[in-house]
Structure formats: C-alpha cells, structure tokens
Image (tube, rainbow, N blue to C red):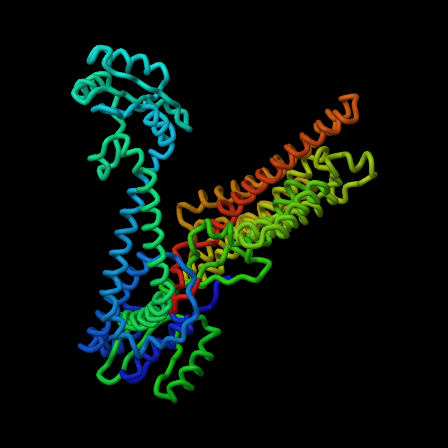
Length: 629
C-alpha cells in the first residue's frame, strides 16, 4: 500500500542547523527538497535563498572528504579481517590520525608492492615446478666433465621429438646427445647436450624448427642449466618465506590500526553527510529552512523529538498538500505480511504515482484466485503446498525464494479449493475411485458454463479496474477522465446484462430497462471520451474476452490429466502404468505452474492494471545514516 505522505517545513536558528540535520539522519524519515519553487507560496519562496557554507564549514568539508578518500585507499591495501571492538574516541584524535595517515599509506603500499612482486615471481616459477623432477633426472645423468652446454626444450607432442632430433642433426651432425623424459603433467622434456662451441648452431636449429628453448626467469638467466634447476627449489622457498612475512606484516598492521581508522571513518562520513545535506537547506537572514516529505503518521513523533532536543528553538510545521504537489510527492510502499511477498510481481512494474494505487494488494488477492481457477486439482494443489512448505523449511537466508514459496503456498490453497469445486483429483480419478463430485461444474464436460464463468470473472475484474481508475482520476482532479471510466464501466455492465438476459429469457419487459440504460449511457460516454471513446470501449470488451484463456488453459490441463490416467490404465502392467501416469502428471503439473503464472500475470498487467495504475512515481529517498552490514 502507498503510505500517506506529509509536506513538512522545519525551521530554526542557523546555529542549530548541523545538529538538526544529524538528528534527521538518525531518524531516517525525511526526504529533503532542493527546489522549493512550487511547493510553497511564491512570496515565501522569494524570502529564502539556498544556504551557502561559511569558510570554516567549507574547510571542514574538504578535510573530511580528503580523509575519507585516503582511509578507503588504505583499506584497499589491507587484508579483509573482522574488526575488533575498540573504545577509541576518534573525535579527540582525528587531527593526529590525519597526520599519521600518509605515513601509514606509504608503509602499506610498500608492503603491498613487495608482496605483489613475490606473488608474481612465484607464479612465474611455479610453471617449472612440474618440469623440475624430469629436468633434474636428465641433468643428473649427464657427465658434467668438460665444457658442455645443456639446452632444455619442452615438446608439445611426442611425435615432434623426431622432428627435433632431425633438425639438430642437420645443424651439428652427430656431435650432440638428446635425453628425454616425461613430466608429471605429461609434457615431453628434451635435454640437448653438446660442446659449448656448438650451442649457437643448436639454438639456430631450434629456431628454424619453431621450437623454443626452455626459458627461465630473468633472475636465473646468468646461470648454467644445471645451476638453474638446482636454484629453482631454493628460490621458491625463499619467495614463500618473504611472501608470508609481508602478509603477516600487513595483517598485524590491520589488526592494530584498522579498527581505529574504521571508527574514525564512521565519524567523518557522518559529519560529511551532514555537511553535504546543507545543499538541500535554505535560509533567511536569521534562520534555516528545511522543506521535505515524510510519512504522515510519523510527523507528531518527529515534532516531539525536535521539541525535546532543541527546547522549542526548532519547529516542524505540516503544510497543506496541494493538487500540484501530487506529481512531486515521493512514494513509499509498505504492505502487511500476507501481501508483502507479492511485491515480487509488483516490482516488475514502474513505481506507481502517489495518487495512484499500489498493485501489490490487488495482485495478492486476485492472482492466487486466477491461478487456482486455471489449475484446480486437489492432488496438484497438495503437491505444490508440500513443495512450498519444504522450501520455507530448508531455505532460511534467501528472501526472494522464501517470498516465492509463500506465494506458491497461497496459490496451492486456491488450487485445492477449486479442485473440490471442479471435482478434480488427478483429473477424473477422484470421481472414479473416491466418488468425488464437483460442487460447481465438471470442466471437462461443461465447456460453455466454464466459458461464461471465465467471462464473468473478466467482467468483474475489468469493471473493478475501471472503478479504481475513476477514483484515481478524481484524486488528481481529472473529472472528465473519471466520468469516462465510470460511464465505460456502466456500459459494459449494461451490455453484459443484455447478453445474459437474451440468453436466459426473451421477454421484452426484462430487456427494456437495460436497453434504455445502455442507450442513455453511450451518448454520454462519447461526450466524455471524445472520438476515441468507441475504441476504448471495444478495447475494454476485448480485455474481458481475453479472460477466456482461464477456461482454455484449465481445460487443456484437465484433458492432459485424463490422458495420463488413460495411458496408465492401458499399459496392462501396474508398475509400467503407474510410471507412465506419474511422468505425465508431473509434466502436467510443471505446465500447470508456469502457464497459470504467465497468463495470470498477463491478465493483471495488461487487462487489469492498465485501467487504474499510473507509473512514474518518485521513490522515497530519506536522508538517513548508513546502516552497518
């Protein structure tokens, strides 16, 4: 439901402004207006002007902004540790912290840079860890006596080893040895051994064969291959030790200083928010003026709070809400516990205007009703109810799922109700086995009564939408539009009465009053709606006819349930028949959840809400203190 809002004016001495803004932020129930023109009489608007910060306030604002930015930058460098409780009073030591902050930033940034260098180096070396055992086994088998060159090569596929051997043979003949091994990840590793003077030709052969020499980090580039392999493990251990030391230093700093900076940041952002709110404040020569909106039911409590805290120096006055204010009034939606889950569907629509209606209660009342009318089976309803209860029991911390489960539970209850009205228990199985008789009619056989029932629901729904639309138009002082909606509703009821009378009786006496009523209303309808009145009337009649889908989709569900029962009985085997029937009923239930949901929403969004819901609402955004997560 749309909460009633009041236009309020708060005024007091300029010296009390920041304290008043701080109180309003704590209460979190007032949305301030920056542009007051049109909200107050022009004479009053000319006497006030936008408030400008004085030199001291502006200097404080710049200080707080700089401090807040630097603290956030500092926190980005620190590990995400839970904050310990601190009794530090930031108000006393804020200037000292501002002096320490640059040094702390420099220290943490230096530690973070060193830590990043360690991580990068370790990531570089880790790709050699898998190859290390294979390389080490190859190097250990080489006679290191004499001047030999060791060149490592990784080969993507085993068949390329022959290509490598051929390329090297063409370059240096037989003056080389090639040792091979397989690494843990399956990579082929080749070690070329040759005299030192043959090394350049070996590398040229590798380049021609498009096989790259195994490259090591630059810090090991000056070492022979055997020394490189031996140094890898030591280097990794050294980097791990250094990384752990840097992480421990950052963690120790965070444990010591982060709670202090966090409490200081909370204070600074509180003061900064108050100073920033002054852009929405106006002033006269002697006092400040705040103009805004708040829930009407909370006006008296805020007035009493201001009176108690400022001893009558600050006053709150509730201003008259004018017709021209309706487009600017912010919208706040609050719904009772039963209605609240259906806000899932309402949030798909634009926020309604203040003078319009919240679609949530209508959705909560009519959507489950239409859902149950379409699905309408006792067993299907019981299955959905069980599913809803399981979701509510198992899912605790996901509000969206819990709201969906509550909606499903309500829809399941209506499905069970209409299942008894239609006499459906897995289709006709309830009548055959349990002797269940329909209390209303059998949908599978009474097709024409089902059509009239669906059209009657559509008539009530659409006419109700037109009546609410007339109420909304009267609220906004659109008398002609309101009259047009009322006349449209009257003509539709009259036409529906004529159709019913013609079907039930042919006596002229019973038709004459309805004919006279319709004949009088139609010219008035054209006068109120203009040339487009016939089109709007036809559109509304088409909307009513659209409700026949309730019959069509429900009938398809019933027939599919009958087919499931028949096929299960024709199998000749109890187990096979039961399996076939269960699968078909499960498929039917799945369709029975999605189809009523989609078409039920469409009937609301297109046929019903279009008659009276007006979007374009302005969300209520009060000045409030940030809540801790």
